[in-house]
Image (cartoon, rainbow, N blue to C red; front, side):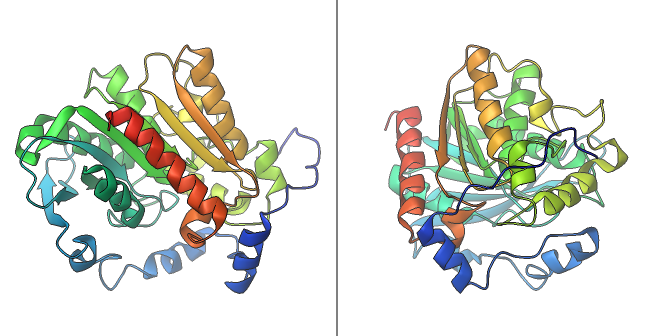
Length: 328
């Protein structure tokens, strides 16, 4: 879509440590176009991104895969369940949706970070596998996630989960799906959530904020890549008047009655302005949101450069928020 915005100003700089690491990795990846989707998926074509022996952390976690009923008329949904070994009492849990721009990934993507939380705070992790666009456009991905969440809540006792202490979480596309799950649970009278942890979430299909324009052709997941992901999910409806907030949570007009949110994003990435706006909309609706804009952070900086000072700060802040939400 054409933009009514003036030409973008000079983009904010990358954090020097992150910029050096990105250069050492060969620079920013190329903009993703539709014909590149098969290449993006190729990395997981020959097996799981994280095998079970990695997920167990040397026996710290018991790992199991469960296939549970999907949405009406749809296939079953696979849930990867990681539970602290030997736990007997019901534990708090993170229900996780993976990233990948709505077009790639599996339920093991991003779990290294989530299992760090689980090890520190003694949590159960349930990570959902959802159908991917463009083969399965909206509402397939979010309805798969919601079916998995409803099943998890209904079988909390079986999973050893405290149903009153469940947080939905995700990064990038997974962050958008986690935000949508909070909206759906509120609107459908679904599971009561303790919080929503949204890491650089993908929220706005319109792809037309100042930060989207500033970061065009720069960093990780630029405006072209974002258009590819949203167009795969929504087709010709992308950017139009009739997009559901369950597809693009930035479209929601009522953000009241939601569980407490944690939202973080880099200052030098496409999603900066839509994520800041989402936190502000939660506040305007009388809700609770903790917002962090990490200066000089590009999309996914804490995963690509985990040893950087900014990445360590980002990870520590999320853990502190989880500890408060779970009362640990």
